[in-house]
Image 1 (tube, rainbow, N blue to C red):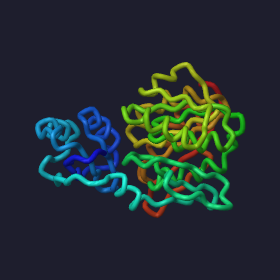
Image 2 (tube, helix red, strand yellow):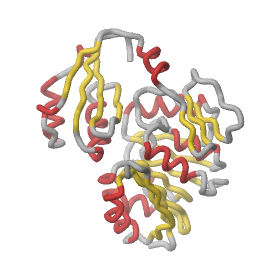
Image 3 (cartoon, helix red, strand yellow):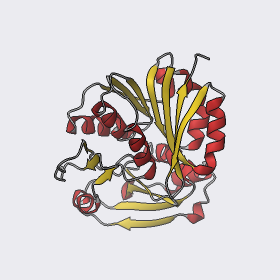
Image 4 (cartoon, one colour):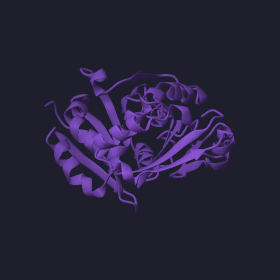
Length: 281
């Protein structure tokens, strides 16, 4: 964010709407998105704000426009704000996620540097932590990986550090390309290919491990596509949903020839599921 007046808007909706809402607003000039679980906080330069466009998007997603809260934020040093509020994260005593302005931590196996830009995938959200912890128990050595909806690229970075031979990462959001490239460079990572777009980009490909930290609706609608690109005996690791969503996701995964290997949840009921593909469907 630059040193100009910004409109800050709190949009109260379900977590299932966050990804689509982010995608729609990013195309209209919104630059910042913060997931606060019960609402999403979004930012846009004041001179770019259009109330009619925002209302149309809210109606499209069946969100009551009267429920949002708006504030105008005076110019300030956004970098300084982020540096003061962004704290490092340690996962399973093995992964340390920090910004470039933090010092490295001694005696840590995997040091990850992620540039915080108000985007999903800094390790602070339960689902990102769940997936990364699950990745520690998976053999990535010389494996091919697809990081579906990669966000900042944090899972791609970890996959390479865990020994993956290659990672294909994608995301529908415009900001992802620049942020992923920046984070790959910060971590001196090679072997990751990023393409902007949906899962159709990898149609016909096959991967040893597919990782998808996305919301329930996207997972359910693309389950056949995800399973089709998992190699026989390959793994599908998913998160981005709650415990109450497991039954529907499990049913969809089993119908595609997958076998459930593991499930783990947090005290906030965010959940991760790990599956293996047993045969070619």
